[in-house]
Amino acid sequence: MTNRTVMAGLSALCMLGGCGPFPDARAPAVDLRPPQVESVEAVDPTHMQVRFDEDATLLAQRTRISPALAIAGVRSDGRLTIITGEAQVPGRPYVLETEALDARGNSSSFMAEFFGFNGNVPALLINELTPRGSSTHPDLTELAVLSDGNMGGVVLYNGTPGSYESRLIFPALAVRKGSFLVVHWKPAGMPGEVDETGDPSSSFGLDVCSTAWDFWVRGSTGLGGNNGVLALYERSGGSCIDAVLYSNRTSESDARYRGFGSAEMLSRAEEAVRDGAWKAAGARVTPEDAVSPEGSTGTRSLCRRADGADTDTAADWHVVPTSKASFGKANSDEVFAP
Image (cartoon, rainbow, N blue to C red; front, side, top):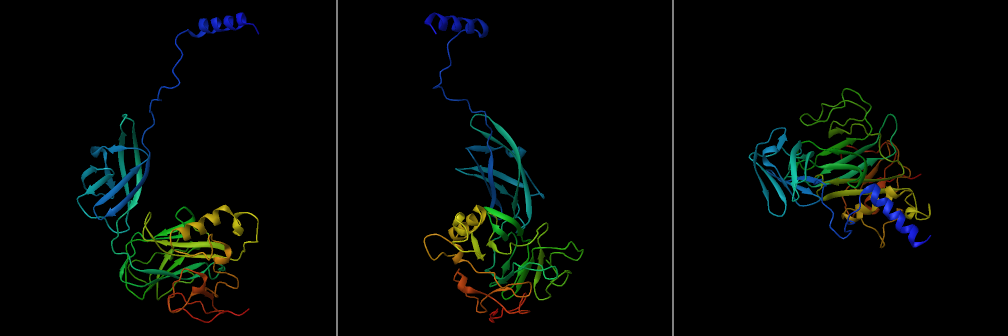
């Protein structure tokens, strides 16, 4: 192609589209993207912090919370804080509705859920579970209460906060040291499957426990039978209280995912270790660090030692003999022998 041909082509483009100076590719792009909310969290009974993906402010006149909490003010001092004139109910779900504005004038309206602040979370342990339940004895998990407190907003994950199949966010419930809570992971949909927040004998269904507070995870299809993590957190976005990693696999089970069988399961195992609730023997967590569910059934549960040992390792756990599952009472130290 000759220079003359190239020039002729450029002239034709100028005639079709108008010829002027080409835009400077070095000029900064105009920000037209509105701020995006990343989290809303109650940090004490009358303060909520809101985080965005960029610096932003809230329009106080367009901010409201339901169920109704009076807005006393909005403060911006490096982070956005909403102040209410009354205390939140611990663990109660609230919805924040507001409008955010960034420095370029871009705005976005959003709604976000948060849970009422609970400053009296009890000491808790995951104490027993049946990951291989049956139609008559569906999957359960027991929590042991080690100190008086309130369960409002405490979260139990079938998985971890970064990756989970289902979760239970507890409502406000005053509990006493020595009591138990039993979580039903596979409800049958019976009318009597109600969460017990007033009367511990008000629930009816498979394996309800008269000596514990029963709770039901709506929409859950149960725990993983071979691989899983149960993780207990003081609140959504809060610190980890306890976790249990279980697996019947080994590092040689597959060449990928360190033997855990899936990227999802590996991620959950790593998160439990990272959050300080489980320990790996080596530099990286492997299936050999987990509690084995082999031998467990709907009546042969995985039990923590009766003395409540909590080393965050498989040494704390064992499978009990048939019919020795002990939900709602002290654990058995008997060990299942195949």
